[in-house]
Length: 332
Image 1 (spheres, rainbow, N blue to C red):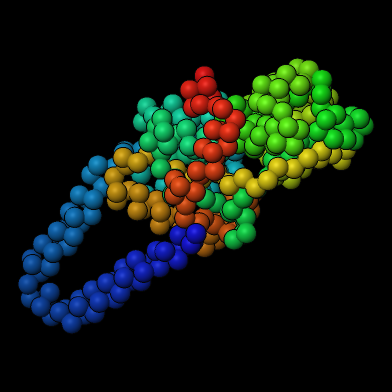
Image 2 (cartoon, rainbow, N blue to C red):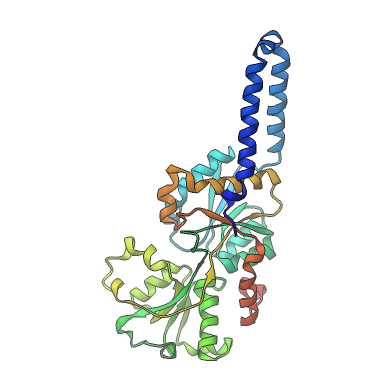
């Protein structure tokens, strides 16, 4: 996959060239403009009218949905610089939508209440099927960072050393549709232990869906559960807020899954093409914006966004099929 910035370089160059030529034309015809002011005004009006026409079918307000992985107030504070940047680029108000879970996010998008959202990779496939979401970009740390892993964690003194030791233990998943917080670690258990999907459900003592990677991680810290399946990046994400927890340094990784594609940004497929193009360009440009560097680092998107499309997430559909899990089961 190529970076959006590279794909759009030709467009940017063409626009820049047009501006230069237009400026030259204005200088060459300055005398004519002074002599016939009315004609130039008509030309400018036509250009402005054309630009306005391109945006006539845009929404009055653009709503961006945030992945329900952490506390909403923390997420909103972290992502607000991006919201302000999009607001400036689009020229319309941009607001956040916080779903209680991925299902709520998908339903909000299907109802037209959310125009774009940052999804987990499996939740995206559901959003594509149910809400007409269209993946177009993926935020990454570096060019080798288009995938991540799920980990099964416990505490050092839990007595859990292997996956077999999870038998009868209290366990936390994140969300039924979470790739790294449920589906991939569950498939990992099936493959590593040679058991069925139903047998995974039966092997634990009590099972809870914590609702977020942070909540599942904290449940292990507090001893509410013996182990949990979470995304590997959550350990670093929570260091600032929970690094002083007496058990934080006692977190142990029991097992690690194979690579999982990172979640994409996806917009509604039926958005106006001019709005889609503006969003593509805006996300391509974000890595170069000085005012966004702190946000990019906090969100683990230092390298900006690469281009993706729906086919990049076929592995998620294949995993779901292997687990025997239909979209209907996941949404309900």
